[in-house]
Length: 121
Image (cartoon, rainbow, N blue to C red):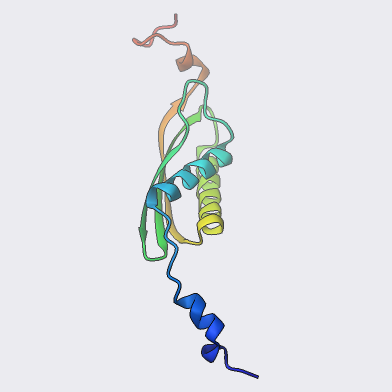
């Protein structure tokens, strides 16, 4: 039986180089995963967006999104954190140490139809 450390085929694989994925690509994957976790963006709202910092094989992700009101904000944020972590680790192979979720706006049926001054149209 041969020692794997002395295997010339395995040495060739190690010497080929490394694959790197740009932070902006990881951010797009994270934003897509956040959208999958919450379903659809609220009416009149924008899709989630993300920022990512990658250092070595570790990613820190910050996701900004808008949610419908009323809703279970804590449950939805937990689902976003879980989905983002899972998808980034599966698709890119990075270890995700932190997923921060920023809820930028809550959309209610009342505010969707309000004029800019807050009065109903």
